[in-house]
Image (cartoon, rainbow, N blue to C red; front, top):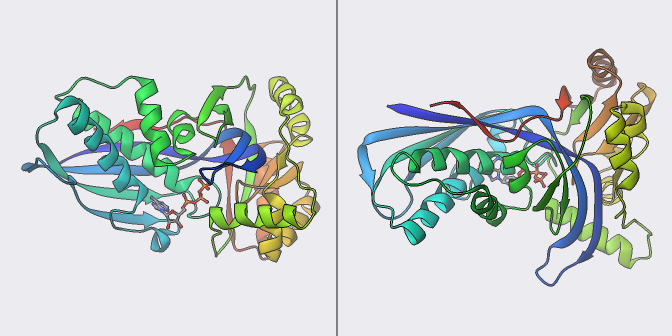
Amino acid sequence: MRTISVRAHGKVNLHLGVGDAREDGYHELVTVFQSLSLSDVVTLEIDDEETVATGSIVSGLTATGLDAASVPQDATNLAWRGVDTLVDFYRARHGLGSLPRVRIRIEKGIPTAGGMAGGSADAAAALLAAHILVTETMPALDQTTLDALAAELGSDVPFTLRGGTMLGTGRGEQLTPMLSRGRYHWALVFSKQGLATPEVFGHLDQLRDQGREIGPSLDTTDLAHALMTGNAEEVAGHLANDLQAPAVSLRSDIARTLDLGKQAGALAGIVSGSGPTCAFLCRSELHARDVLDDLLSEGVYSGATATGPAHGAYLIDG
Ligand code: ATP
């Protein structure tokens, strides 16, 4: 049996401005993504002995590693959906014939339901792995088409496919690369219990309806300038997240973690995306390790250090 393995990275939002809910239920976003060194690996185990002409080519899925117990192992898994989306597109548009049956293996290093786009990274990795498999016999898709398929899978999937530092608008799927100098060092604190992204957006709407003034933080100019300096202290002064207030309101442990990070000497702390992961920007790798050690000694659930920006999804084997 042969394999194709693709790595994809998690993200933190340096800026997450949330506008009004649109007619389609999504909120209008202005966000700055930075991909982080934390990553998952999606492997297609290819059985060339058995071919499939209709229906899903995926026969099963297993996940191991961080939070693996919370990862669905059926066709609802975003990696499974990534393979199906790519194959269905080729069948509809390019008359794709039969393909070998595959099993999906996911090694998780990104927390699940942690606001770090773990599922989205797996969708991007699976889309790319399936594209590599299909283009053994078919012409390749251009980047715009791959991005459009990624956006069908989820708002964060195009970014996890591309990586780096990007401005995201629309529901976060319309991407513009941003200039960013240097490397940024983070201490991350994970939670035992995840937070569902729609719940956090819904709670933001509720808080706003009750009169709480939360953003919308739609101007990224200062952050863009700070990123060009490559100075973490400058960047630390311009982190913003409109989902932080609702995430903290839903989960009191987040406020405590953010306080502890400040006391531990982090340059700044922010809820990552819809949370509950908290991300602390630090001066250096050593500083990030010190901050994390401090937080762990205060009894936070678990954590890791990470650097950014990292890459998008890329082939590591196969
Ligand atoms: P985002 O930051 O993009 O809002 P998140 O990091 O908060 O997302 P995910 O880890 O992407 O959340 O998972 C959200 C939900 O998606 C999980 O609770 C899980 O049920 C489901 N899911 C589907 N596929 C996967 C996958 N491959 N890995 C993790 N979760 C998955």
